[in-house]
Amino acid sequence: MGEYQYYEFTAVDRPLTGRERAELRSLSTRADITATSFVNTYEWGNFKGDPRTLMERYFDAHLYLANWGTRQLMLRLPKHVLDPATVAQYCQGDSASAWTTGKHIIIDLHDEDEDGIDEWDLDGHGLLTSIIPVRARLAAGDLRLLYLAWLRCVQSEEIADDELEPPVLAGLGTLDAALTAVAEFLRIDPDLIAAAAAGSSPAASGEPTATQLRTWVAGLPARDKDAILTDLITSGDSHLSSRLLRRYRDEHRTDTPTPAVARTAGQLLATAAELRAGRERRDAEQRDRDWIRRERSAAAARQRHLDTLAVDQPAAWQRVDELIGTKKPREYDTAVQLLVDLRDLAERDGDSTSFRNRLAELRTVHARKPSLLERLNRTGLET
Image 1 (tube, one colour):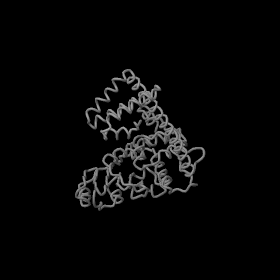
Image 2: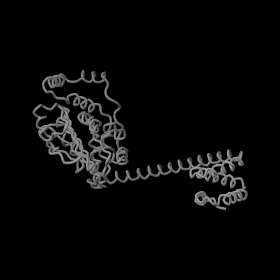
Image 3: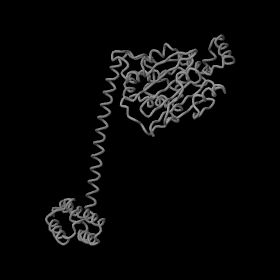
């Protein structure tokens, strides 16, 4: 396979019309197109469409994956649920940018493999499905994706070392499955995330209960309730529930959004390097411990094997003669291994002289078997 490119677009807030699907079909005759998605894989050639244009006109999420190291994720949300000014605080480079179009803001997250190593076992199917929940979380006020986007820029060295971090969101130390999928897809350094999480307060515990929400709604001013009901009936806003949950969380927020002292990008990178060095040192120490444990286990097993052999050494020597007598290469190998065991047993028990004498006799008897002698020499069984 020369190349692999995977394109997937998803419509969340509304299905595509028949006319829109026909317009998309004109861009690709091979794509799988439904009322909510466009998926195509290329092993040669390129996609004719412009992903930015498709996001502006039709879709709410896009994922692109290429085997030469390029990865891209786009998310579109209404501006009334995600403030462009807030997004601008975090999306500050080529790896994380955003633009507005009509009533929407589109976030564009990008990673390019700096080493340029081709990946041949890629499969984009299912990746966007694992990531798409972050969009609803963004709409509901969970902005941790934006901080991850800023870290992607830091990792790509698009942020100056002395640049202060934007407001740190709670819960960076406990990323959910969708945010973890984003971090893995964009190859954000886990040590950099851990460094950032050190300045992040714990996330609020769980979702509000039905009782808590009923109590909150009951206490809302009448004009707010009227506005909510009117929107529910007339606006068709699929994000109404997310907006209300966001309002509830904002009114019940107990965490502080930023650490006492904002850190710089350089400080975070330095902390990440320290964490990485510590982790690698611990990993190396664990590998050493594992190696020692395996060596001790192997040595103990070896001693048990020699103990068994010591019970009847004459039978072992007789077995050597029988194996050599077959004149078969495979049996020669077995005989030589048994001789190695007898040598090691003799060295352990202080009887090396006796072993060497018997080995010399064996070599004399079988002096016309060059294949056997070669095996003995190769294994170090010399008199």
